[in-house]
Structure formats: structure tokens, C-alpha cells
Image 1 (cartoon, helix red, strand yellow):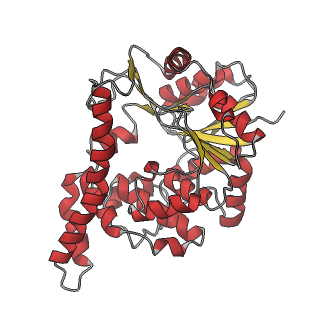
Image 2 (cartoon, rainbow, N blue to C red):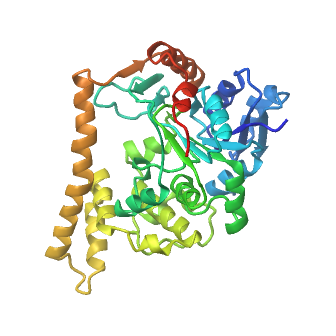
Length: 408
């Protein structure tokens, strides 16, 4: 029987975390779900760890030895998926078991893509990442932010325009179909591959797929409800690149280029290695593959510059040099500074005040819920804890909220 949902995991050298992710899904007594593991590790230890599960028809494991780029690994994982819908998660992530019911609803209502919220997050032990405003990072911890369970349909053209106005970065601030931690109809992914040669290109599968899918998806529904559990472990790129910020700033040192051959970097993006530039470059790669040069004309480069500096102030001089090099004088002008300051005010600073600061204040004043659950050694325990929390605090299952929405 063809599975309804394929959970695809592309992994490399994070065997212990991946085993936990796989076993948490296989522990569910449901055969409409499939687990894909595409392994590109330096050894075959993960295969040995998962061998006892090979009799379970829901598990598909494939090993490809290096050299093999990260994007190739993601493409191979998607290619192995047999489900009607696909959800890509990281090897340190987990799922809310209700994702199966949500996928059933999507199929019954002819929904091409269903996106949940990232309101439940798991931190593995010994990540080395700093704590947050509210908690010390003790690890083995599930944190759940309040969510509304609101359901709505999205105008994807508006989302694409907003993304370009934001400097083609920080795409998660907008409503998009999401292959990573979202639910996507497999036939649409197959159509993208048929038209472009691959499911994914660029350097970041997240934003590339969000933009590419936006050009094919007819119906995207968003629900403010956690369908997956993003995880952070000591080997996560979230820690090494986003939080700890110990990576090199030279674009040539980016691990994303490993085994990619002669990759052409987008001319619109500064040659600086950071999360924002990787996203922007991959966004432009998707737009060009989709033939959407009209959207490139809406790109606000100063918003990209502001987002880069706001995320990592040590990159300020490199951004300034890039801006200066755009001028015939090779100097930063007063007009450049004014435009950059304007971008700061309408972009990162405005968002901090209206979203992060207000959100923190609501939690402090106990207007919004914030739940921290400790002593959860693996993602499986986190999955069970989330299930218990949702039953206790929200009482009604995800399909109750989805059924209140009738797609057009």
C-alpha cells in the first residue's frame, strides 16, 4: 500500500541523533507513514544502528558514500519518498504524531501544501548553545510557545513580494509552502524535477524549495500549530553558524560548496558567509530557475544589508566594503548610510519592537503561555511530552481546528 506521508531525513555524521529521530517515528502504531533515511556519513555506523529496524517496511535506508554534496543528499532523500505527501526534517528533529491526521485532512481537502508553526522546539543535551531570555540552556529540554491554532489560506504572490522587499532573506517570517517542517504533495515536487532537472538547487534547501514550490502550489494552508519538533544538537548548523557564530566569514570557506563543482554565486548578494547571504543566494537561484526575473526587480538590497549586520555585527565592515564597491568612487556615501539606516528602522528594529520585545513582555506578564519541559533525554521523550502537553492544555486535536476551515 502506498504510504500517505513520507518523513525524509538527509543525514551526515550525526548517527546517534538520527537513530533517535527514526525510532521515535517508527514507535508510532501507524502504517500510513514512511521514514526515509538518506545517509552520506563518512562511515556506515548508522546502518548498523538501524539494522534491527530493517524488517519494518516503513523504513527506507540508503547509504551514499562521500563525495556527495548536501543538496545532492537532500535530492536523493526526496527521490526515495513514495508517499503522497512529503515532509523533510533534520536528523536531530522529531514530529508531532498529529502530522498524520493533518496530512489526511490535506488530502481530503485537495490541499497541495500545509505549513505548521515552529512553536515546539527541542534542545539536546550538551549543545554548547547559549540560553535564551527566559531559560538557561540545560539541554534535554522541550520549549513550547503559545500558538493560536488559527487556520488560513495564503496568497503566495504576496508572500514572494514581501520576501523580496525583505532582502530575499529570513523567509520563515512569511507564509510559504515549506518542504522543511511542512507537508508537500509529492506530485508537485516531481513536477519541479521534471521541469528543472532536480527537486532542489542552490545552497539552502529551505528557501530554495519555499520559492520554487510557491510557483507551483495552487493551495497553501497555514495552521498556527506545531506539526513537527525542530531540534538543536551540538553538531547543528543552527548552533555552529547562528548562535555561537564561530564560522569563517569568507564565502569560499562555506561548507555548502563542498562537492558542488563550479557553483555560480548570485551577483546581487555580498560574498560574505552567513545565514542571510546563503538564503538570499539560494532564493535568487530558485527565482531564476522558475523564470521569475520580475520578482528580482523588487529586491531591496539594503534590507539584506541591514539583516546581515543586525544578525552579526562583526560583519559590518565587510558589508560596508561591499556597498562601497558598488559605487564608482569605491567609497561609502552619505546616501548609502541614509538608505542603510532606513532599512534598519523599517526592518530589523521594527520587527524586534513589534514581535520579539512585545512577545517577551507578554510572556513576562503571563499574557502568553510559555512551557518548558526538562529531563527529556531523546527526541522520542520530547514527542511524548508534546503529545501530553497538547492534550492537557489544548484538549482538542489538530483535525478539530483544521475542520473549522473550509478551503475555497
